[in-house]
Length: 558
Image 1 (cartoon, rainbow, N blue to C red):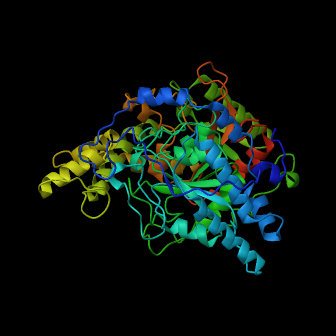
Image 2 (tube, rainbow, N blue to C red):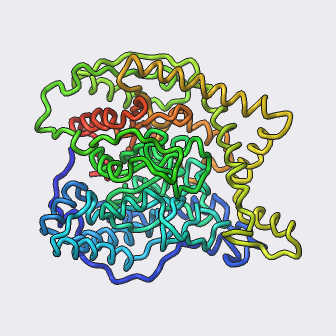
Image 3 (cartoon, one colour):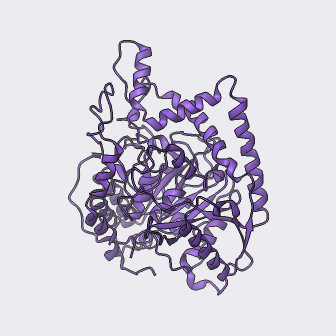
């Protein structure tokens, strides 16, 4: 069961020494940052995997020994003056610096910038000014979400040195809510990957076991929360990039409905699939962050005017729940997600979680979705096609790194050749091919037709149940380097999550157990709940009841 600590014990608020501007660069991976010409990788993944296996695990475990306070507790104490936002921020900065020695979740952080933001909250409180929903809460931001005053690289060398002149809408809303933006987290290059090994700068480790991947592409955001380097973080989800890392790292990850959160300021990978969402140590913490960032935005034509619910107030305290808090609810376990290829202990954990839902009064039924397995090929055709178009803007002319060349055509070629990593090049080639004359109808058009079938089938199923249930991933976190030479195997790991993006539906992942198998001993397993469009409130309520009534330990091992 969860251990209770005082806020001071959780944060160990000892102010660290001021640190200078920090931008992570793997100098062993690149011969030059300023000049991409001649850039070549000099360290293979086998070496990176050995680095992870031989990293200092005690430092990671020491970082894990401090538990973070809930966002509700932090904001409450800041607002009543029991604790300053600066003390909270200093505690997290200390934790960040200690854990970074082994986790490598952040590409950039600047301690004084975070402290100044925290001081502003304290000054506003002292002056009697109203404080925002997230007053004094340290939050990390994935490196594909632009933030004024911070570099944004998308984990790619081609954007090395790019400093955006504006804030993404979600970042601006976090600032308005009083959040302290603590740094930018590592990610697979342009969001293309499932392990965070695809970053051009460093490989992030899973805080639960530093020899394992944290998932991806939001692996840095998930690892930062799991290692208590921040209270919550923002990630982006194109095909499971919030939910799979949440499962691997044992945290809560929420993918909102497409259009619920503005995409303005999110560097595009696949525009019809990309969604921004929160990762946190509890469902309630996710509700706080979603409350702050959700809503329509005139700068994003795809954002929805649908009314935003009061996600925080809608969550009932465990002391106010009756013996059957989910009585009358009906959940559908997707048959196709419990078949071959799914680890035995994952199946066992999902079955146990379903039994727990039943003990809370919910009815569990098995549902079949015949189009389920069609989602994987359709997703990679659509996502790669849109990526081919979106990434054509990176040519060395307008922003980012430029290769030195004698003529314009060679500059274009060298910039993209040296600036993009292998996975990005692979997907650009796939997308260009599927959009080319003679193949458009055979691939892209057909994939969009399959997408329509998937959306109709999932919405039909959700007309009979309150939420769909499935594992978040076929297996727990696997070893670093184990799939870098097998991209098809890595793609198959997205099977549980991609259909949700194709249908534009919301989904949440919460920890539901740990593996007992030899290959994945003690690694977390997450359960995924999928709801109807703009039914985030219902999903949060289901997940919250499950979380507070189960004995599953969250982000940090006891």
